[in-house]
Length: 271
Image (cartoon, rainbow, N blue to C red; front, side, top):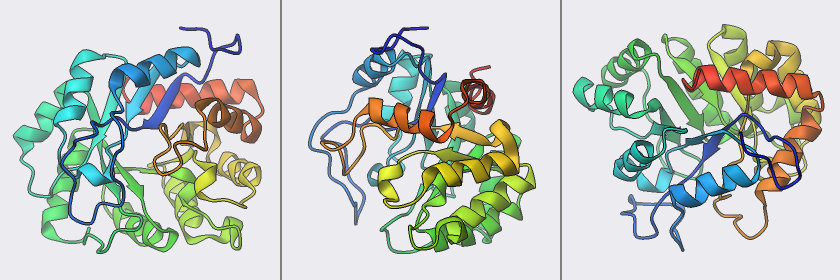
């Protein structure tokens, strides 16, 4: 494992980062347009600089079901895993090919997008059955209210659930934020994990208190570290080191942080 710039070891697994080419085809209504290439070479270099052994590419919303770039990165770097965005009509053959390549889940990144998928439809129920059979997870990010509604629908299936960024809480509601409460329900089901990540996307929240509540509910077996690199929409304001330091502040016990890393290694199939 590499030594970080500060002389120590970083988190074992970064469970959320993005890689994409600047000229990627964008979906209709895309909320972000890349201004530069964000390559797997750059990402793995950043991991090395901070002593992080493994990384996970979270499918970028603005790329939609264009997963070619993701699969190319996985083929080149065995230390990476990924989630993919897929249409509910995706075939079992395609999913199995992704599984063999190192994809471990599917992502729904819906914040600021119109429309909410109907997870109760027969098409999505079939997709989730296949996701469960592959031992993948469903990775969700949206406004808190939509996280809550989608989580409850997912809890009616057999899939594993990963919720981004503390469940997207608000400063006004804190622990009572609907997305955070959904994260607690997911943890309580025994099939849910929550990323303590991207505090700059929920400004004003007491993230240490939120992390302590997550730990109290599920222990380190239900928490994940993520950098959210390259901090889409906040690229010039946030550094990777700041995200590692945020993780260390909200989870101050190094032994617990190590257990969280091992949790991620199992969930993302590095172990």
